[in-house]
Image 1 (cartoon, each protein chain N blue to C red):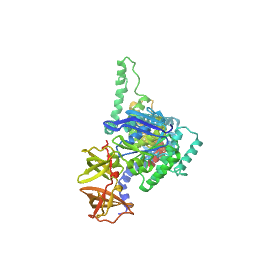
Image 2 (image 1 turned 30 degrees about the vertical axis):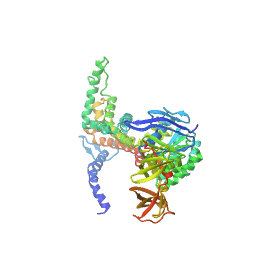
Image 3 (image 1 turned 60 degrees about the horizontal axis):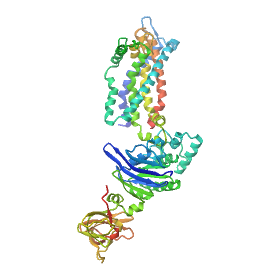
Image 4 (image 1 turned 30 degrees about the horizontal axis):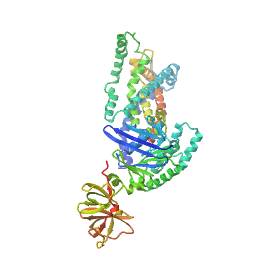
Length: 357
Length: 279
């Protein structure tokens, strides 16, 4: 049970604003779970509830099987890596890392040894006597990490710890952090608004919106099958269409978005005559030559080309609707604006999305 | 114009003011402190260290010690009283009320220090407001005025804002996320105070300490108005040498010993103030 988290129907309001609404979530020991969402979605509040900086208005929080209600932050078996590091400016690197151990009144020899080990863990061995303001952003981040890890908490909470780093360092730290977590088998709860970061690092992702967890699951499950419009949008599904369900027959739903007619594999949720959101990933849209003889393919005109290095996104207008189709760099054809193409939406690539919160 | 000449030009008015109004009078005073009193209260310019030797006699050393004591206790009491107030304004009060409370803190400055000392006389004297209140509930009157406690009360009251404002300024700058981080790392409220809040507000404590200690060392008005006949402090002693005893050379020598004590106090506060720039 050490390192398990159980969140049961937790709610928290600030004045009239409901920051967290009836959230329930379980985290297994040693799991890397990410709370993903835009700013103001309640992810940081949920983390602060776990750390003990806020008290819930409703629900229960259990860490390692113990109800932590009424436990102030300094008595909780969790430690936090803060977004802006919050390193103590009046202490050197060793002083910062040793802070929690000194609070536990550990003997000096043990403190020195554990501080040295923690700094080694974050690849800052020998930085003990450095002043905090002499460190780069990445180094400060590592000190903040060592300061929390040295206490061997049951759960490590990370509040957008990589947000202030530049892109290159950030992707390097993502991998390092993930490796570290796997090595230590420590429960990590990680907060970010960066979808790629969440998908790269997490065992499981909980996508939050307006104080609620809209969907949680493994990164590939979320990516392959977003349940709601919000989740699909947040995970970067470029083609989100509001479609009319014209008929449901033979395992297929016949949909119309304006003049664009296409089919979706019926998941049991389509009702003829109603409207539904559907999503299609750009890489699942097939682009064909203008003269290709493919049944069900639509004629379209290339409106825009978005070159992304490893792939190219084409914006194609078909029957009045703009659809984004991705081609990998190797398969990409040279095309010009206004060029005629054909475009196919495979029924199994069209996903039905709930409206969500 | 070169940057150097521009700097010199900008500094000139201040330098001139300091020279004419500070350095020159100090030099004259120092020269006087080396002379001796003439029969009619003038200055005989025959240099010796006699006045300094006299200033270090046990009688006067005792008065210096009383003054250092008053300044130290005043500073300590101001710190104890102002710390919670500054903390409350910096951390507990909603942003929109802060400036109103800061105005309240400096409001006493709108009235002359002299008038405020007289106000304390009205409060403390035998037939004063406090004793009238005590009499109303059937308690005997207390001797509140014309003693060292009255001096201390007046001095603490007068200097309190000079402690509270720098303390507030340093607390306002204190990143409260550091306090959260300390709590997260297992520090109880008391240890958060000791390990984070105190060291990081040390510059404010040092600044407030200097601003309260130095004027209290040379305090003149509060001892003169609220103190007893026997309670002499250096400020009154110096004043008496010039105005009553007509011994300007000895008064000047006493002033320079006092200035030396001030320098020691400033030197003691230098380290924490330097630390402020590093933060």
